Image (cartoon, rainbow, N blue to C red; front, top):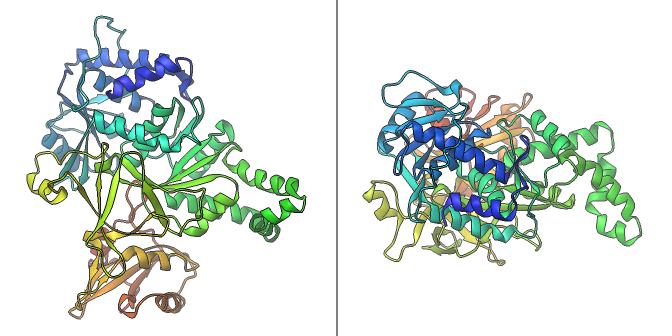
Length: 526
């Protein structure tokens, strides 16, 4: 099956089911819109094998254009909206893109390719134009996973990869029901948003509520109006929502009572006070519209207290792990069992995982194999030799451990591991997980740096107003006591500015380090 056939399957099963919620468009009408867009692109010369770029926020024309490109047998180049013209020039040149369908706000003068308004009005459907008979091994999407200049890694994902990811998401079937609603505000050009905000709704025949901003006020307004059942978000946003909820309850001087009820709800129900518990929890759940049943986190580790908070509200909270090369989640947590904090779950569907070359702490490299994992980087034989072994296992580049429940824990990217002069390894994620618990710390980046010709673990802390160097230093000393001395962070910088992040709110460690070297962070403890 290819991606267009996956859409047709929904038309056969659920023709009247709403697919685009905000626009009130059902699967049947959406398919007609796809054929009209395909007619328009065909008249522009798009044909089988062409590469067409898509540069857009989460608007209806995004999925519409994807399917139209596939209808014609062409490939989609997914472009990040946060990049620069120089990067777009290089990406389109490397992939041979014919043109880029984009929102007008992204247009600029270029001689490398042409822009097409993604919000253009389409032609009348050409009924003689039929869907190209794509094979499952044909490339569906192209994404740049690291570096858009120099020698980048371009990930080609086939229709087989995408549909296999859709099939593996069946793991979530206990929460996802046809006709219900998926909230899609994570960018669709990113693999996490693409998998959970696009492939999952297609697999289960669900509607998607597209949102092009991550403004909390706009999101909360959507929750109140549309009441989605499934909400995916990056951990940072789950922390923000939790903080806002707690602050709102504290403002009413009711947090002590609410906290007591949440922590002791089983006992209270046993004592016949279930209605009181439900009343309190329902009031909090109403923030998300009152119908949210499944919350999904991905892109980074979620703090245990955040996961616990939402679970206590009666909503399933799952964490996923994946990469662009794996079409998003290949592992997913199991919320219905007692879990070890920070676990991101076990393999889903047909995916196999194994840890290789584990150290004395059980931390080793995660390798994976399965149908949704790509077959190799585009025109990059050197990278492919490093990424795959002779049996088809893919090296994720991530260091992990495994707990007694068979769930994996992220320890850090291999390329971010800090190798001290002693030869010992320090994993930034472990330390960042400790330091982010310090009151007043908004975010933190730990990375390898050199002080007086000595390699150290260096931290840059983004803090709230009022945090002083002395207060932070004292808090870091206390947190350092929880790990081996060789892991201690004794050199750090403080800033009230936000640290630079990616579109999925991951901190750009290399940028933070460069800014440190450039003198941007002057409030330093060295």
